[in-house]
View 1 (cartoon, rainbow over the protein chains, first blue to last red):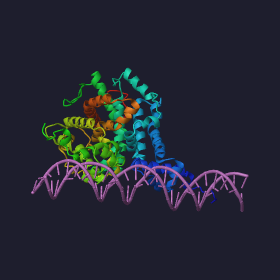
View 2: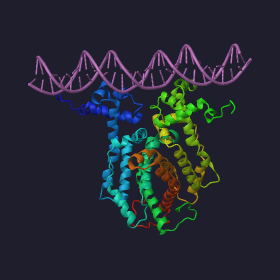
View 3: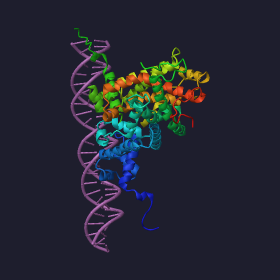
View 4: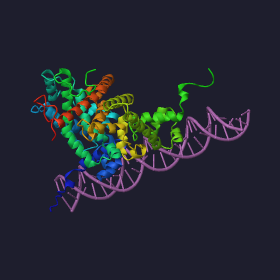
Length: 229
Length: 229
DNA sequence: AAAAAAATTAATCAAATGATTAAAATTGTT
DNA sequence: AACAATTTTAATCATTTGATTAATTTTTTT
């Protein structure tokens, strides 16, 4: 009505729009394969504006990558530092959080992995994550010292948690191309995994307990390899 | 002694040497980021030889990628079709095989994932894998129908197997940069996982049995979320 | 040894691409 | 409205890069 244009179009500055366009193109094609002209086209603005707002393609990439990394890494620290949730609840929250995030942004893990592979030490500058030992580590140590016989080092378990959560998104294109797993089927599967992964982790830990304490005896005689080497 | 030069240098043709150099550079930097000049330098030959032996950068890449894909995918089919090994033994063999392969060639998974992301339908042409239902699928169905209460669809378990095996190699650069996990520590860890991953899979399956058949009751009252939704 | 074929190199080309510039359009200020 | 500052554009530049060409060297054939 008035001369103030309140379209959503006008609400975000062109600088932000270019950055968002850059994010889309960079995540889709990677740094080397994206041309500044791609970003210009995706944003709908003139090529020169990219250098006008951001000094160079590399500077723009650094900004986008840093933001994505921050989002990926720091978005979970509140979960990991929550003193009101149990260890198990944190596992579940973490898995749900990441599956939701990656369902929205499936190309993100690959984008990040790519950057890490190409420029590993760039991480150190882009992420200032002085791992201040989040509360989840305290909880883990409590469980270790108290009753359960968990492994001292949670590295394996954390890797598994992340692997089972993130890897499917990395493998999704292959699953689609080779196994005919379409988008909705995949999303269903990931929805299932929100509850399955914490269960699996639980079973890993329980198995570990059983092995070390001999509280529980093997049920099936055919079970193999269920002993420490 | 004689004028026949038997150096290892001379045993492989320059065509092969260029292809190997290309493999190294492509896997390290990805298709878009590698310049033909990089390959020339890595091989030690003149730039023009790349186009002399392989018509173009893309043709060379196709050859390298196809070979790597074939290696990655087809190298396990003998294992999966082995009629003399049990299902559990196949899991173990698969994990060991891939960890060995990726320890030798750590950049391989990322390289493949990259290609799949950029050009998903290219897989169909590069890999002629008319999945002829390897013997492991027969064995799985046997276990399903016989005694165990395994999930009909082994998709989740197979994904987990691959995820826990492959993902660490993808995350390795991050682990090194951020967690200070050095090469030998990492290799040790992966050596441990050769036996751990089959155990974990076993525990997942056992947990599944317990849930479905109620043969076993929950030991710890604090166990949460161990029920079908 | 001479001729032919194959392999290799230096020089060069043409297209792509990141970046810049100068002008035009828009917005803000007085 | 007039002026200034900011934003946007079209045109252009300089470098990079995949590819080619013509000449040179090496190997093979006769």
